[in-house]
Length: 326
Image (cartoon, rainbow, N blue to C red; front, side):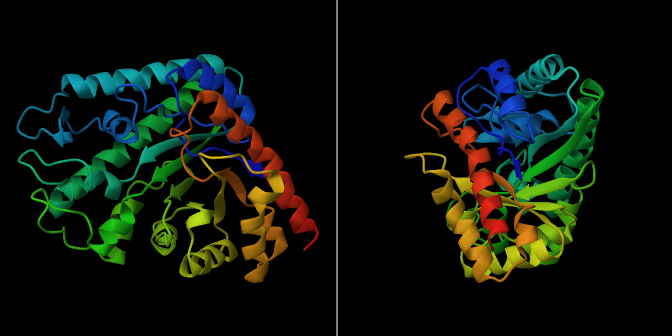
């Protein structure tokens, strides 16, 4: 079985984390260290928006618009940080061959976070959110090409993070005034925009929700879905079953990001139990990728986060053993 992490880690040492991740998991990934200025997931996405300019306001990132497309000082700093991370990856992954994962904030979460030049979220403007998704897709393609150039042996996998999509679909994203909500987006509309950023490489869409919109992810072209197993409700499990049987790779978040570390059997038990209850093929269970429940940025220390990553392989062994005995 296979293990990986979901992107974020604590601390500020990208070189040390790159060394760790090249050894600790089966699918290494370019870490996000949100403790650093411009190191959070939204800033990382803004850094790849080569066709759109944005600046950082007290309320968060805002598109600047107008006739001057030049990046702001903040956007240039975000790009510089990403370039430094890629420099570290290129040096430390010299000679590496195998899967390598990149994470990027998805178009719907970005549209519900980034503001328009005159206020309110990009989500409020159909044309603006399409422009944002187009720019994100273009930037992602360039980002993937750059990583492939720097690490020629890498088999790049993209993880698109969409924690905000359930709220978008439910019409639960507040407007700028806070007195109302943005209009909900229907499933076909969600699929259309998300599909724009899927295609540069095999793509897994990550959403930690009780009922992640897995059907949207698969219809958009995702080859995998990443979920927090502890949060899934019955409808969520039904969607997981359908996706697994249709050939999607399931990334199962089993190791909690905080709190006491469980033993491998305890961590594996919720996935194994539900897999059996759903009557799913044990051979499909062996193909599940084992991950932490979510990003590890909230872990109390880099050492604690490393312990949780180390637990992944032992948990994967427990899942594989249970699959053999099913």
